[in-house]
Length: 133
Image: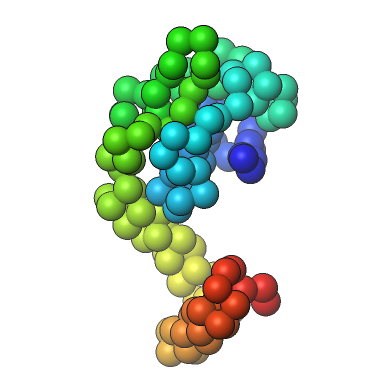
């Protein structure tokens, strides 16, 4: 599970963890029933306080995205992600906004961006996975 923390982001660290786990679930990189790392292990990997990870897990559990099984650990909810449709749209909107902002800064026309997206999509379809630049 790849999570990156940015202390200078301005977003509280526990929310960074929440948002990234929500993204992993919504994108299918974490699937229903999949076990997440224990609080202490993830905290060690991210070099953050275990209470921060515990808070993020609690937040995700209250959303219905995670479930804690006593003695077994923390798992992605089997009932599916309640955040999937709306969260996917939100995540994609944020990424599109960032892409469009970058394109404008580089003075790349919208048509060129759309054409590039089409070509990347075709490359991904041919390989059956994420295409590399």
